[in-house]
Length: 132
Image 1 (cartoon, helix red, strand yellow):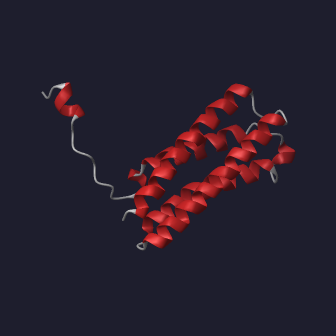
Image 2 (cartoon, rainbow, N blue to C red):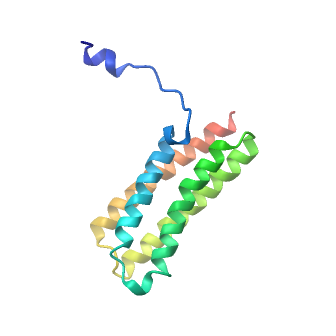
């Protein structure tokens, strides 16, 4: 049986798939959370704020995947930048949902924290892609 120290110092796993990216993993969690909270929005918002939030969230992870699959640095940066734009849309739409009473403050805070994490990870992915 290995001790905890040996286990903790395991070598970094090579990124082989977009699902290995922490940016995608945390973005995917955000998508799932967005779908969950928008189920509570009023029915009349189905083609408004509900649809906009869901589309922006899906767009974020889709652009991370698209960038990951691209070979050129320029294309990677373009798609990762578009993903950050979608994240900005999510942040704005969450503020609107909170301010019009669709999101309780604690739910908004949880989602807002997740968007900050995802933004930092995306910034790191952009920075790393510039050095490739």
